[in-house]
Amino acid sequence: MSASASSNGAAPAPARRIATGVPGLDDILCGGLTADRVYLVEGTPGTGKTTLGLQFLLEGAAHGEAGLYITLSETADELHAVAHSHGWSLDAIAIFELASDAMLDPDAQQSVLYPAEVELGETTRGVMEQVEAVKPVRVVFDSLSEMRLLAQNPLRYRRQILALKQFFAARACTVIMLDDKTSQTDQHLHSIAHGVVSLEQIAQEFGKERRRVNIVKMRGIRFRGGYHDYVLERGGITMFPRLVAAEHVGDFVPVPRPSGTPMLDQLLGGGLVAGTNTLVVGPSGVGKTTLTVRSMVTALARGERAAFYLFDEGLGTFYARAAALGMELQPYLDSGALTVRHVDPAELAPGQFAHMLLEAVERDAVHFVAIDSLNAYLQAMPGEQFLMLQMRELLTYLNQKGVTTMLVLGEHGLVGEVRRDIDLSYLSDCTVLLRFFEAGGKLRRAITVVKSRTASHALTIHELRLHSGGIDIGAPLQGFEGILTGLPTYRGETALMTTGDDGER
Image 1 (cartoon, one colour):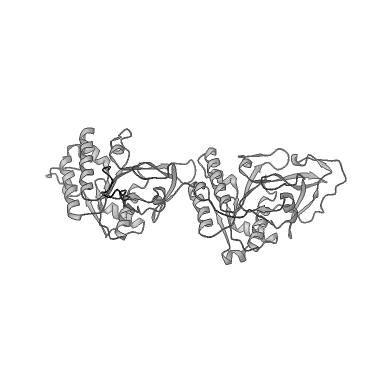
Image 2: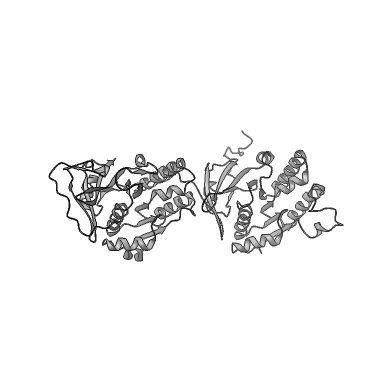
């Protein structure tokens, strides 16, 4: 019989897991931290280590667990100020402040002003005496960089950390040790700690800084690898686990549904299919958003819930333009069937946006999603390669949940040669192409479907007209050549649509 098996041959009970108190982190850790272990949270100043430590202790206090915050680098007043900025009270948490007035006394044996002269053994004994007095279940030790300075050499430092680890283990304490990464080459902590959580802060050339977390190691449990975005705001840290589409497989029937424009349904080979995404591509003002809103209103009218994420346009302009084209959104907003969110890409973490979509689908039962536009979404990403990976996971997730998705991608240029920031057509299930072209002394619009994975779509090009009554799509433009270039040649008898009040929409 193995040493870990019980006398009757049964497998040992799984180790107890405890919540961290940080939204999203327990999901990343697939259930929280293993109790009665020592963990390392490392990160440069400003990444939120202290905030995470306080959230960990407050979570325990909410469940009646005694908590102790041992601080070598911050004063108790500073800790209370941090808590106050988040709207918290630390009354239920014991704070042991080594940087006290007594330690600054010139007659005292220890001095915070000259840490190299402080006796590390006495500091460690002070920590142990406080633990014996408080008998905490959760402990935060802030910070190990001070211990490193006190130790003066790696061997002494490692011995002291090992002594603390054994001491805490004997008293069934779950401990988070904070380190500010002042020693980039120090691997002692990684080898000693049961788990290592790394916090990073990345400065952007414009906009809000980005923060991300990476679980470097975690013994004995499964966790979500890679980088996960998080935000540090009033109320604490919120982490957004990286979206893995394979974990969210749904069951649905991929049936085509009307878009609200009969001729567009014919071009698509039956309509917009549930569980697919449609990419609407074209230059500014050609009608991409209008086409998307028309499809969304049709979905709302048949009882579906929808979410529209607006990156470029202001909300006031968006609502006014929809109403001017006969698509009134306010009743759906009032009933809660429609959610329109204006997203500032300079302030948004990419993982936060993915989390917004996931909540809309899982919590609000949204079945129609529109993103306008991918150009601005690109600006929220750290690089093009990450956009591709994130967008692939996002679209796969939405498809697996049976969501009808419409994506708007703007192109640079109006007539003639156009270009786009990025090509996502290979990720789309269906691609609708819109173009301006000149004919009869007027600027006109054309529409065609260039790709569909789910139906036999039409290959014809049609004129598109926007007016106060909505959208019209005419007969195939069979008498023209070169429409998609913007400067067509007329060679047949096909008549163009009668134009009226056809301003840019």
